[in-house]
Image (tube, rainbow, N blue to C red):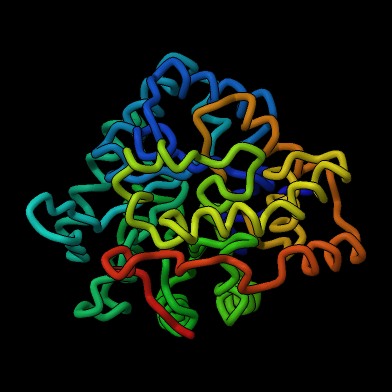
Length: 333
């Protein structure tokens, strides 16, 4: 197994990381015991990159990681932890507020460090850009956390390739986080290439399409109780049923190849470049094992060609975000 890098000079990590939004109740109820079982499995499998945020469960995800680190001291050296700041949840408005000020980012980073019981994180992302604040200024702020020892490297989430170039000219960027999967291919229109050119890792979140690219997608009834998905264009009717039907050939292909559907979806991502690090999340150790199948399966050119035939680019019904959900991510194509 070949490790991957969080930037040119960053930490070497397992090819698959873990998206710790699953430690909150975003995709369904969970608890600390179930989350700790996932972390036990990650330790055993050699998974090293944990990707969380201050707003996942309003601190719940980081708190769960912190209690695990406290009770498993060896895990502090094992895991490479990334967290994020800048989103201020707005309970009274239609969308969140993005605060890129030095004061807010430092306060939130300090809170994250306290919740997890660590002195620094391996990677600190700007979770969302405030377009009114020059990216150069924000990068200087993030670079300041590296200088003070609170973060070992910096990154950005959901930014455009041109923004990445401006930021990287100020301070080396270790990683850009972006949604990327067989159902969301937009990073192929410039972001993947720019990351590779600059030596920046592309951390791919939602690599199994928020459950669509699995053997057991979330049911339509379950989705009705999930605030994010209930209004997401790919999970409303008739798009939901159309997407499930479109995926039937891919599920059969995965089965014929001896893989879970999720395992094949993640294996496809790993084949798109050595700088790509998928971060699937799950509340289930069984599903985690299915995701990890991808590490031991290298796909041939013929395999990749068949996958493209079964799931051609643009197959998904509905945009990946609703109008309200599009507030924050930078569109670049």
